Length: 87
Image (cartoon, rainbow, N blue to C red; front, side, top):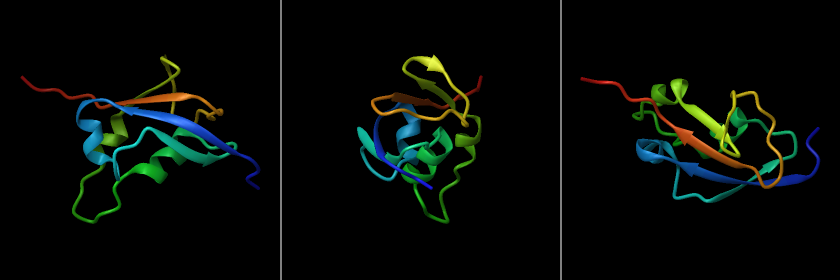
């Protein structure tokens, strides 16, 4: 069961902002939350929005690469970056 709450600073870079519900800086999550839980809390919930680019997003927690299963701690900074390719 979830206990205490934690506050995480979110920094979406570039086009990652287009997938978020609103302009965010700090997000409150339950203790034990992961990057996946953070994404569930902040992404747009509309049928006509393709969120597939988030499947290949890169995440940094406190400027270190982190997988989606990373458990977040109070005060962490999460950077969300989308990989774009083209030519």
